[in-house]
Image (tube, rainbow, N blue to C red; front, side, top):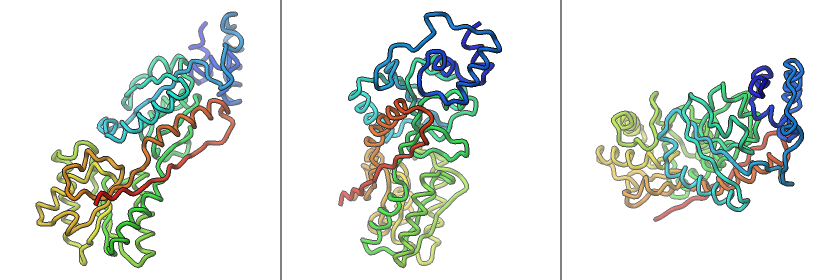
Length: 342
């Protein structure tokens, strides 16, 4: 008899069974009850060296290992410069508490890392829109924090540390309005993206409240980060440019919700005889300078506070480890700042 069999019978992860056996925090009452019932049904008796709490520190940490799981349908998202900044913030926060970081880049299928499956981590940080359904039962039993904006789900679990997306939209509107632009456009690069939707809604509300107008340029296909010069993205951006040129009156300013699209958009506009920043004033988001370094003058960008998000994720995870699963979910929003290089 093994804890793996108990876990299967209870419908929880082996990490949860281990926590119940060793009387550790971080397990909900309902899950603990399922584990105990499964142990009784199977006649499982923990060996003496497993029974009772293992040595732990007052902060609730047992292994001093934190796992970062980077999960996404599009692996290119995980290699954006902004992710490097997030990781730098996380590493700085972990170093302050003398914690170890285990990084795993995983797709939408396949097993979880052994360290997570075997309970060798104190908590997990997740980067990506969602995890496969078969992982949720395991990961939701661990202290968990999502980085950035999670794609919505009614059964969402874990805490979240994200940019203040409505504030980003308001900053973009204030900047363009402050430069005297009332006719504006918004580029819908990724239809259905929750963070981009919030940025657009706040941008539209702020512009229209000031007496301006917003035209949303949208396409049924999605632009992909990093792969900004591929045939697919150029097809989408050319279609958006056609919509832009067909507007009457034509907007004199444009809000792009991500920096990675700036080079391709500028290139396509130049091919149509427009000079970016002169004929069309731009503001974008992320402060991802490597993606727009070739554009002169550089567009203004909104820094989402990626390093602060990484640091704050560590602090939130430590709070969750100390307080356990009975505390309500927490969502922390980090304030953005506008950077105008002109």
